[in-house]
Image (cartoon, rainbow, N blue to C red):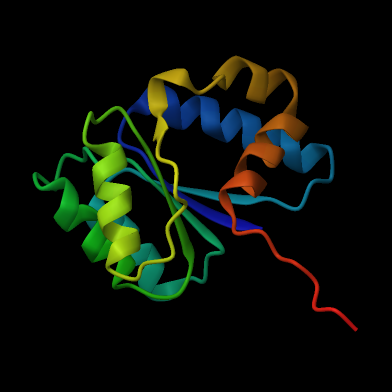
Length: 141
């Protein structure tokens, strides 16, 4: 699974990369790419394919949270998930879904993420990312 995580806080970026590195060492299929700004995320999305884009709504180069998710959604076909400290995260995610975007229905409060557990148990980090993807039900034979 290839994931673009758009996160501007250096400490959160560091913890995410440690968790991802440990997941890879456990042979979990994870390629995590961090983008620190909206422009960097757009650049990555132009040149790379991602299964999941995890989006913080408060970025240094984007004032309007709805515009942030709209700009990312317009960059291709992938699942989005909102993980943000913004108090508007739920309404922004719901608006994106109503507009036809492939967005996880539940936005997640970034401050509740168990970064230490993700580092100690990389399979929990991988499972968390998997939980953000849509359920794939095999077709009946």
